[in-house]
View (cartoon, rainbow, N blue to C red):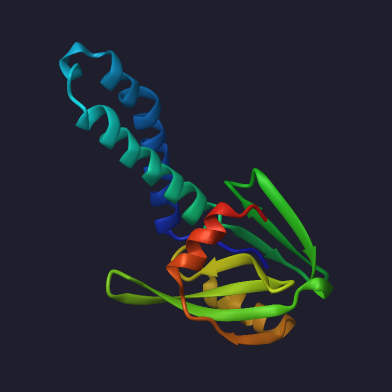
Length: 164
């Protein structure tokens, strides 16, 4: 079984492309246009915010939650960054899965953490996966349930910085 993306995933892709455009075309103009000479806000604060937002969207959402997952009887295939990074993990080495929730705009959304060696190797999000409940059913039948894990922004930030 293969995950299918929601409209939110495609919207996120468009936002990331827009931020990349801003970083590479508009930010350099802040430093070359004489209109901005002597001003510190547009030259320091604005590029910092745009670059941080691009980093957060790319590493936090695209890398960790907007993944494509293929599940079969022997292995999990995890594709990140629009399929540019691929990882194959045998089902036999997966410890299990945990359930978690995160609140988005006053709506609680569910996601599954697939665990190997006490570390999260994949996150399947109800927000980004159209067939989330079908995938959840497959995971429930193949892997051991390891319990509920409360969502933590600190853990989420650490996973942004880790490369797995």
